[in-house]
Length: 340
Image (cartoon, rainbow, N blue to C red):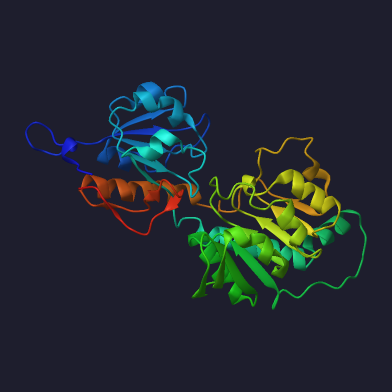
């Protein structure tokens, strides 16, 4: 992909035109001034995106859950690069974008350790009954109990990308035995030991004391944790979802929890967000909910803004973009993408 279109008639390099999609009430990137020093910038919401997209070289999806690009696509006549300020790109991906020459990048790497820490915290909170202790405290009930030792327990990490690897390393560091679930089976992996194929998830589900979901959402992974997988799990098993809500068949999960086919679920992501007030999860004692916040440590927005600016500087200087998404697979390729 050549940047020759960024040259003015006199041969000097012109600034690229960057459209930044923001949601109503969303804080702007803190480094907007630095971005403007590298590009001609237009800020817009979803309603204004079609018009703003005309002539734009780059689209920065600061509103990373938006699917507005699909509707604006016919007007995006000069678009060459889309950056999504999130690890998952499922919300904004569509067939025309996949088949185009437009490069997509994401926030790969920014959330690896924060989400890994959240997964570990969820496991420890379950094993040590911290949720139960808080509920008893609110009732002024003193109840001595025995808790579960985490060291030596089994964690099946579903998703073997950067976040999955960071999670595997952290869980191993506190003594859990870890295996992975990925696209293809392989052994002797430095982080997971053994990785089983995702098509065999039900076969290996019974091994897990904790199943941690971190896979990207694709047509292959949608509802991968279904009734068959849940039925194969131990009655003492704990499901942790820090990936995407649609990785799980929620109706099947509700039934499995109600029938005590599995012991508990710690859920940070859901099929519908915010979760409707009448959803069964709210009143289920063996469900522990958080508001899609597992990677959002203090300063996360600034880190995302810095990541885009660094890639924009590479683009402007004719360098290689980082964090290029394989648009068919839905996650980052390990190969750099040249902007030349």
